Length: 195
Figure 1 (tube, rainbow, N blue to C red):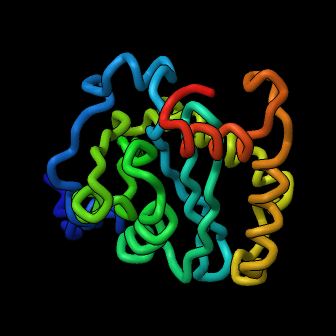
Figure 2 (tube, rainbow, N blue to C red):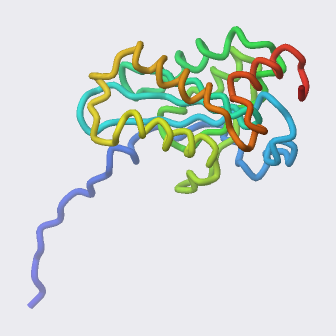
């Protein structure tokens, strides 16, 4: 005899119910001059979250100079992410605002609003290919030296964030001929080209 098993409704993960990011431009369409770090003003964005607490951190990394901005967020929402990125990049010269590369997290839903506010383009990694924005991933590893993975981000103050950001941006880098990201970023912003 056939067994009559009770049918249960399918359960979908929270992520599957989130709205799909509109008008994604795949990273394969990102020009070689950006991929090869030949042009200043192209960024990568990522989020750092904690298992406890509501707060999150947004990190944006400029690919040529390795300059980072670390943004404390009240929560990991697309609205908070959008506001933080616009606030940090708005006052930069136009040649410092070329593009931002994101992953497919729901916090990046408003990428078009960011583009509209800042005059930028956006590119997206392929799903589950976060290594395609490896520059910001490396920056996150540096940040994790100050903020270990199990840290409740609610306990991290804005002052803490600024101190961490300053320390990372003022470390000489071999890839920058032992100049600092802060120094190189300031030169590119003022000159509009490689110093």
